[in-house]
Length: 199
Length: 154
Image 1 (cartoon, helix red, strand yellow):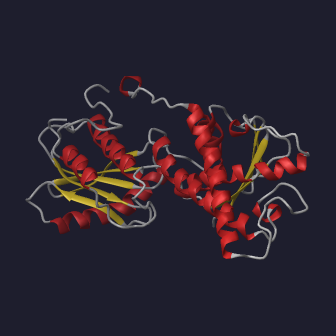
Image 2: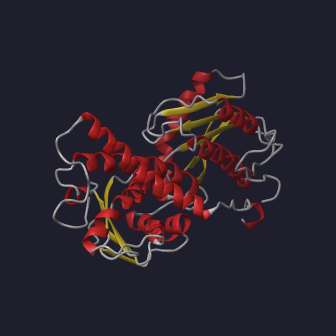
């Protein structure tokens, strides 16, 4: 095994971080510009809804622009995840069950994406898995001096891309799922994976 | 590697849709390999459930002068290699190597943003074709494969 291991590729981390954050920013900006151009009477500035974190529904109730941002970012993530899993599951044994796949995500996929493992995994053994990361890497550079509620709103779009990645990975492994992420205090966040019951 | 005489390499997608098939041996018509590839789908699924967790599934069945080998990835893509039975025994290790090369070629192909993974269309890519061609003819790829696994030592 060790004999035919290819030397690992290295990549500048800052570039990757800038790219992911700018991707989110660009997506929000362009979609809002579009919304303004169309001349929708609704104020498309995001983060003016009442309650805090959660899926796109809670976050941007009635905000179509953010809905579009969510859809696009999630789709980008989905496509990335689909391809990514082909690559990282190449030299792995076959998965036995869904829990095995989720464990693989917690350990190896997280290691691959964020150079750390998930801190805590909870499951109800009925298809819901909660993955907790106490120090989410893509939040490492983010700090807010606004009220926590406000910063949660600002930060939620950044979780949509990794959500999509997880969904893409699961989908390509033949497991249809819904992935939602939320954060309450900044470097920590949780991902909730709901796997549709198979017959 | 030298004694493996590959007649055909076929790739079957998630929904048992054909993705790619290449015939290296003019002694049989393409149709025969299409037939073999589809017959092996069921065998592979059976094997994958009961057998080991290895992606390599071994000899699926033999047919006249051909023996069929299977390999299924985690993403349920099936690779099938048909060999013309030689005089010498074929080592599993050699076959695994062949499949690993096919897998590497497929992963490279799947990384292509212009390839729709779920599209169920046949793979049409010159580069992929060349890589499979090289594997089928049992020669290393010129210029090297981006993610290639060295086949010499294993």
